Image (cartoon, rainbow, N blue to C red; front, side, top):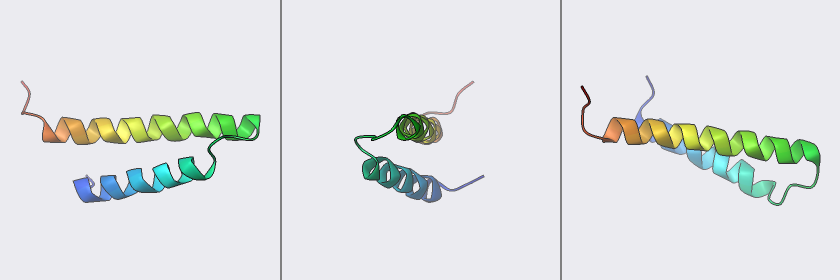
Length: 56
């Protein structure tokens, strides 16, 4: 399992890639932007789950 710091670093890398292509200039970049946003959202969800109160 990756540490929270590693996940935050990856989010920052993905956000940088997203910023480099904003606004998208082709259909391929538009699709890649959606993939980047989805990956960022999923990693942020992982952090929220880890930082939240224990479940069950």
